[in-house]
Image (spheres, rainbow, N blue to C red):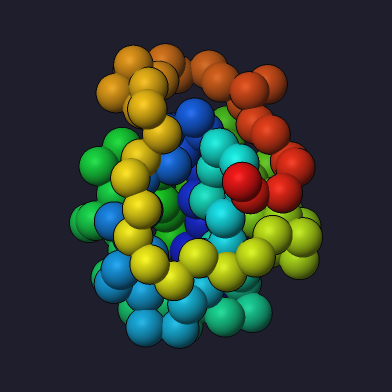
Length: 111
């Protein structure tokens, strides 16, 4: 089992989770983080660090968010590792309140 970043992270990209990851499993895109399932060791350390509650164990990903399991795996192959905490996106607090933002996901390379 691995952990999965879900829709709540889109356009927020808090990186508190990155600081506690012992395997550097997080990957950084322009407005979203993904977890590389091949690097994740299921330690759970990232889960309580996420201020928008976007990280779930694979078996616990809400039904409406199940597509993010494959999405994390796919994006992890494209995006570079992120190993240090950075500031969240400038309007993260506003976007944290938005529930449906899947269409806002930017699959490009991190800035």
